[in-house]
Image (cartoon, rainbow, N blue to C red):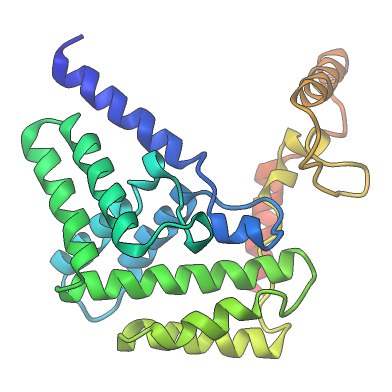
Length: 257
């Protein structure tokens, strides 16, 4: 393996660590099934594609900014005030982390990613301002989801109180207004059904009542998986197998009526 390829692989392993780095604020508030830093950045990147009335070039830049803005947290973690780290020290640590991460890459790619990180940090471009607002909006959208998922409306109200007013761009303000209206009305929007229930995971990760077994030890999960697969092998016509194609067809028909 060449030196460049070895560095790319090491970089990608850190990107993988972002999938295992939890968002600290949710953990501290007792949220279940907490999102990762990578979860957060991914939806922000999708949001970037949905931004109306901006050029394709700006959309692409926003997407790139979203995908790298918290990447340093794969090294330093999601630092908060509870870690006793001041903002300037947090920025220093994250800057050093990004210098290391980008040094693993070919020079041109590394320079681009480090430049994007600095652009977001400095907040001097329209795209950086937009992505900062997307960062806040995704957090509030996630808070809304957690309130619904845990059947505890309003328990993350302090996130809305402290952050909603920080959104400055017209585009994201309109999205936020819709979210706040939805949150105040309660039942206007329902969360999508858990798509894991369309697969064999229904029989592994959930109990008979459909409750997610988020604390089940990994060895018990493996045993449940083995038992379920074994039962399928014994009876290939098992009625417990879900026909996802039929499920999706019926779902589409439901939208059409």
